Image (cartoon, rainbow, N blue to C red):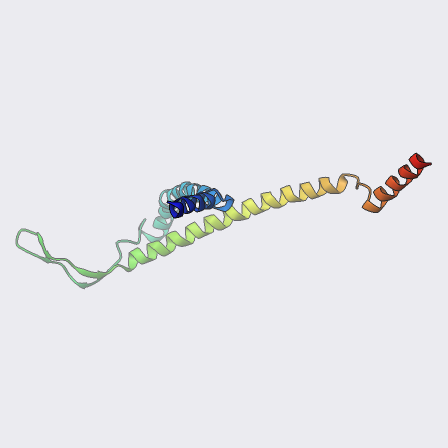
Length: 149
C-alpha cells in the first residue's frame, strides 16, 4: 500500500508541475489553432491555388500501376494499385502553409512580447535608483552614533 501511495503522490507532483499545465494549455490552444489553420488552407488558400493550378486539390493525381478489375456488373474484383503522388503533394502544400502560419503567429507574439519588455525596462530605468547597501550601512552607522552619543 505504501508504494501505491508514493506513486500517487509522485503522479500528483508531476501533474501539478507548472510546465505540465502549460503544456496542456498549449495542446488545447494548438488544437483550436489547428482548426483555424485548416479552415484557412481549405477555404481560402486552396481555392486560390486551384484557380491557378486548375484543381482545388492535388489528391486526384495518381500514377496507376495496375488498374482495377471489374466484373460485368461493375463491382470491383481487384482494387487498383496506384502511387498517390497528388496526396503527397497536397500534404506538402498543407504543411508549408501551416508552417508559415505558425511562423507568422510566433513572430507577432515575439514582437508584442519584446514591446512589453522594452516598456518595462523603460519604466524600470525611469524609477530613481535606491541607495546602495554601502549608503544604507553608513546611514545606520550615523544613526547609531547619534543615539549613543
